[in-house]
Length: 156
Length: 218
Image 1 (tube, helix red, strand yellow):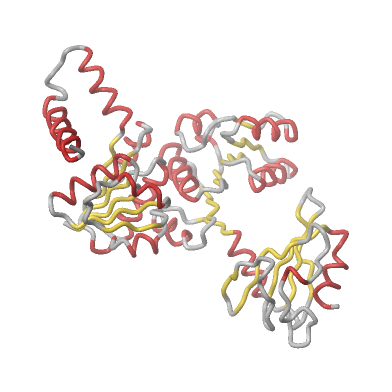
Image 2 (cartoon, each protein chain N blue to C red; image 1 turned 90 degrees about the vertical axis):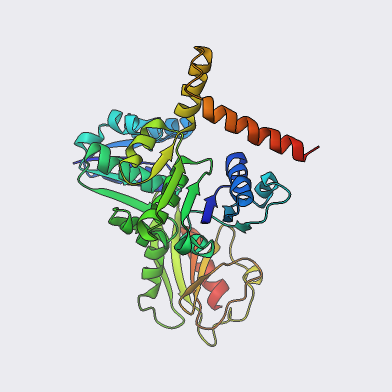
């Protein structure tokens, strides 16, 4: 798949690395050149310096041929703007935005943007761990541990 | 009428002031505490110190009964989301967004925000109006600042044609804000040379207008 990721913080860089390893064509966009250090050393995708809410930057990133876009900057509003441009203007099928404000996350879900809120996902998981409810995060935690072990292994 | 203004920068402040002077009811949302205080000291209790991009503060500001919400922060993504929230959550009949990047006028329209204002576009429109060749035209005073906006065209034979901005000898406090060259906005700094056909916008203290004219036209 052709995948565009807006925002190369820890989450964006991690996801870019995973999808690149899985054989997808990944383009990752960030305003700050320094942010690309978060990417794994063997990242084979494309990095693009620019504002991910800018129409022309998104075009350069190949948004018109993208199968999916992830908006993962630190700003909820920027993520929602990038995601809506991808969905409404370029017709990208899978659009996922990180929106930490739960209220905005719920509202935009009703407007064709899949939203993920770190606030509620992490909060719910932590509560389940405290209560000893292993079912809630079982698969998620196993997969995360495997990814962490692989990353640590690469560093020797 | 009741207006909710999002963003208490220069634009938001002067807009609130003007609307209050025309006897409208206004609530201004500003997330920076100190800025909110400064505005409250000047305009009275018409300020809510809270971010306008969160639904609960829009409700607290009374957006449900607002005739219009006007988003004028310096961030285009924030202005978009503020207007969408106002429309979808509070059913505000009219939402107006400031766009800082003129390209975003089209984007906002596609995303359901029909009314946008781009300051870049406004200045471009003013400049594109006919101005006599080699003309010098004070456009407008900027409220409460003792500054004004001047437009000038550099014609063949204008003494400043070919000179760099740094060498013009503009009076203290005056600055060339932008150059329109062949229909495009050109960034202006001290090393930029003025060319025949350039239309320039100068921000100048009102009292030195004559010195600006002298620096450009001799």
